[in-house]
Length: 307
Figure 1: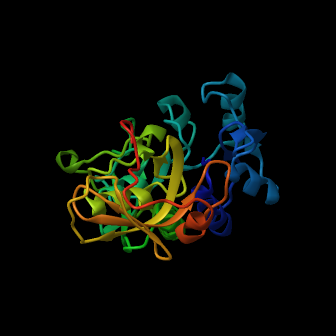
Figure 2 (figure 1 turned 30 degrees about the vertical axis):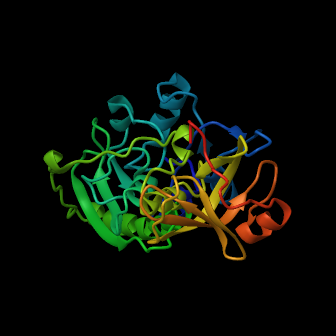
């Protein structure tokens, strides 16, 4: 059971290690800037491997439940599926279900552990395979593997690396389950932190924040929703930036310099060098290229009451 690209390496690893009787994923959805309806990445991959793909609108659909009973699965493996598995569904697998979560649980339970960890300035994270439970990401732990967060990691690069690490850990967990040696380490809920779904509104930069926090925001929200500010009232997406320790008398959001090395903007503490941007209806480009076509004078103030 999985939906986005993060789950595809797990599917492929499971195919090499076990008998995948079916793949359950979300229904087709509008995607991209054109909002064309298409299948989720897991459905695309499963079709390429000629697997039976189930896309129920609800997990309580009688036809879907009947199909699961016919399949008689030993185990449900859940990776970024995006839905809570009801107990009556979980009961249809003789061994219940396991989940791959991209954090070192009990830290960062929830829908967005990767961007939340980067935005918080964490230097390490990891992957956890756990038994499914009724409470979200709170089941007993089978295995965990730590992973560093590099200073230049974005949500996209860290997600790709954790997807590979998680797929390998899943296969290891399957081996333990098959031989009856899988541990059940109870989580210490007093240490739990939470990673709620990211809202598009969070992408707006507050220039009164410290430069390091703004840069972490830029890294965390790549590839979505992409950190952004406003220039002359129009949104300007920021894809890459670096924190500078320089301080000055300028108000936050004030452009201090604009040239070959990008845009330097005053923050609440320090300054931010903007290195890569995307204007409305334009492409991603180095900030220096953007400035050649859209000059910005020092003293210009970016942002607005909203961001």
